[in-house]
Amino acid sequence: MKKSIGAREMIFPNPVMIVGTYDKDGAPNAANFAWGGIAASEPMAISVAVRPSRYTFENLNLKKAFTVNLPSPSFTAEADYFGIASGRDVNKFEKTGLTPVSGDFVDAPYIEEFPVNIECAVLHAIDLGSHTLFIGEIKDIKVDEALAADLKGLWHAAQILTYDSFAMSYRLPGEEVAKAFSCGLKFQ
Ligand SMILES: Cc1cc2nc3c(=O)[nH]c(=O)nc-3n(C[C@H](O)[C@H](O)[C@H](O)COP(=O)(O)O)c2cc1C
Image 1: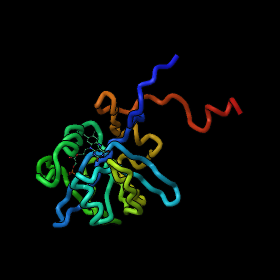
Image 2: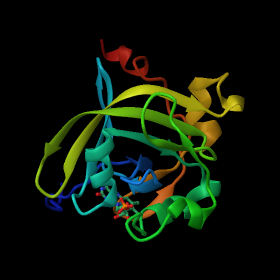
Image 3: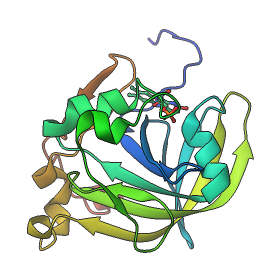
């Protein structure tokens, strides 16, 4: 037996994507976006769903560039603050003390203290109603040097946060259950 819970904008887990942009004056901004993920392989692309009311929306349309910064637990409060305050009112980097670094490949800042930084150039902006889906081509990914040697262990080692939109809470990666493209082969 199942019980319908109706239509919801739900998937488990959501990423915690802290999107870095520059504004019209060149000031760095960062905001928290959970609606999105990998969109394509050729070109390699990420999607981020942004409400037009966000300051980030203006910046994305202006600069056509962004970074996606993935936080570890020591920066949970900073990540959350990026999703509460608007860069229209405050400089969130000054408030949190985090360091914006100019991207090497796109005109957007990444967050030095976060373990993973992804540089993206906007390819498409698709108006879906409440949100506009920005599709960004992945130009480069940077990871903390200490984590670079074992990319298969990156998510767990960096303890990259995920977002649970039903509980409205941040969660850590869990244990490995089985190997993908492998454990299902027994049915072939
Ligand atoms: C956990 C979390 C997830 C969020 N996800 C989204 C999202 O996917 N899309 C969106 O438009 N806003 C989202 N927000 C809200 C924005 O981050 C928030 O409005 C922020 O203040 C926008 O900053 P800005 O005006 O500097 O762009 C989220 C906030 C939080 C805390």
